Length: 218
Length: 170
Image (cartoon, rainbow over all chains, first blue to last red; front, side, top):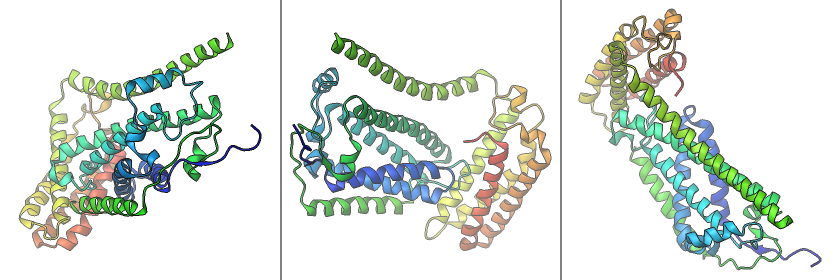
């Protein structure tokens, strides 16, 4: 029992980079919205690329990044919630956190999707797909883009509250593993099976290609 | 006993958290809904409807111009009438805000009271736009795509300048 628990690798580098890049770009997009629209647009393209990559990585990436590995049925989620206090530390996402990942990804997709069609009230700044719809529809996309952002904010707030809850009630630091990739929580059982480098290269290529094609549509 | 009570308190804390999140969601949706209800309650004065249509047409025309200017070969046959339309509409703006159609008159409007309390400022903002759209029309007729691409920034800033001071914040 004495000494430090061995560190185990939990998150691969692409998963961590995507996570923190998303955190930074969402804040950048938030602060530049309606003000510095060029930066806002590029932040949006960046988020789009990161989300595309994350979806891809969720299928072929490192084991803890895969949806099939962490998405659990309602029964498992309920059981986890009921026994939350005594539940052993999960290796990777726990069944409830998996829903949070899903929620955040879905809200990011709808956020970027609406932004592609949004147009400002002056008829001056617009997403690349706004030219395919009329002004008033584009304005509605803008309104929904703003409403969806409130939902995204609420989801991020919930995410942060959850991290705080693990720190307070379970004495578990979830932030550090997302930075270093390694978790020293005692009793952690599991093994990260990393994905080969070529899959990372392919994923980046796909994400960049899709973003460039979309950005050029405008 | 201690385990029991702590799990109960945790359950209530969890409930509070879920409740707070739901309340946040409902509040976000409710705000939207209440605006729509208010809009349908009061009859919209003709002048308000006219100016709303006018600004939508301004926005739609400006969007058409900007969409064209983003292409490699902007279609002047579309840009010229849109620029003319904008210039006509911009000159009509002073007639769209008769007394008694502001927020202080119980009218559901996104126009700020400053339109009526600061008539000089509002007139200056309108003049700025009308001057910009006149130049826009000239450049369109001249077929000067490069000049238009530069000048639309001025037009957009004229729209924005008025929206910043005389319209509720978006």
